[in-house]
Length: 207
Image (cartoon, rainbow, N blue to C red; front, top):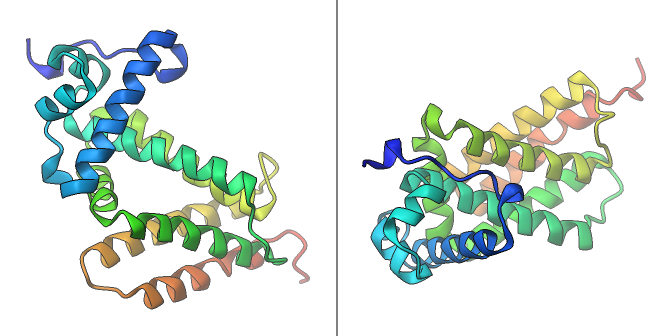
């Protein structure tokens, strides 16, 4: 049976404790291999061996390498979100808090450039079959930005639109930095510039 026809296991919140522990080992192995050698270093057989699971079992959790690496990014963002909640941004202005938050996230990626490259490439290559995982990554990024703004579900449509533009800019900044086409200083300028949209979409902004 090919990987495309293997039934995927349910989302992590529906897994048993044993299944979740196995999934954690798989994601850890994926991050380890990507951290050492980037996208090409993540081979499903090696992930299975490193995480001590059968190859067929691995494909039940993650039908492809792209699914696996997007899930790895989801996992990294969840850890990042938890860290940011423990140590929230200190700026008084919402836009500045978002810029500070995204630069902290960027510097975390900077410490693991091979891993960052693997995850971003997987997002770029993802097709419709990976849409649920990609959507989860987007929702996590949105949640991180809204937390930094001090908002939740009360965000206005205009603010949510600004958040989407900020997400796109951050993702594009990661790609241009990873490809060597932008410096860290340029990334910081771009992030700070786009975060000014938050002030423009604030309901409290005077006419």
